[in-house]
Amino acid sequence: MSIRLGNSCVNCQKYEDHFCQLHETTVGIKHTCDSFDMQPAIKDDPNCTTCARYMSATCPNPNKAAPHMQCSHWAPQEIA
Image (cartoon, rainbow, N blue to C red; front, side, top):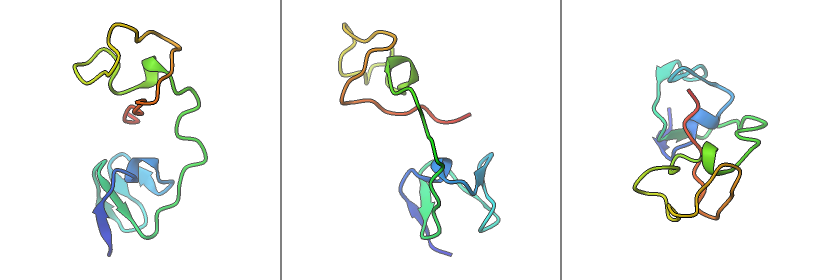
């Protein structure tokens, strides 16, 4: 099995609730593998309210960030 760090398993079609259905093992949000199969749509609304950095200390534009605003530092939130 070739699982490595990469922050991609949560975006794979074979991922479900922290479990890789292909390799039948628990995986984290930082794992990916050679059998990675991207979900057709990760996020269809990349804006401040769907950004993991919104309203946090890591937001690069805390004084400008607002709902429906976009920036080049957008980071998708983890799918729950």
